[in-house]
Length: 221
Image (cartoon, rainbow, N blue to C red; front, top):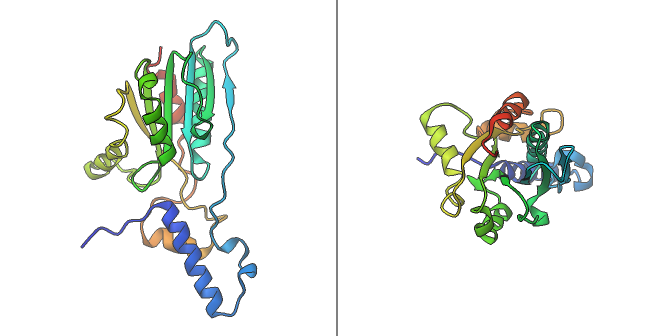
């Protein structure tokens, strides 16, 4: 029998549909559901600049693709840490199609959905393949499934980059835990679906000490 698994996006859809079905059966209108039905709201995707000397320091681009906003914080923490190392750092979302010229290194990451990078991140790599291969490139993933140290989890994490790895030659790859179901925001039914399909741990699983510790030693100099 196939393993029962589900992406976070699928989980939100299933939870929303199930809540809607229960509401209709109970005679409750959609307007009365409020926040109990899951919504795919577009997260904010801000730019950041770190490092005091933007003209004399080595310049690094940290770019990210996000679905729920979890990856924004990871990218910002990486950029801030690199700035403290003396680099001039620009943190930009992939959806802005940032320029890649003028940088001494590029760190690129994406949230994971359906076992791989988001489509816009993969497309960015395809469109900028030559430029990304001219400088040291580091790839990172932000995910909530397959966080274990067992061999099966490691193999699944490694496969997240299968669509990207053949196109570029990264000097480093890293995987960070992201956001799971939020008990303070998700409905009881959404949390039940999350747990039933064993999607991952609940709450904010981002390990800021690990993220910043990695950024302190990542080989971009």
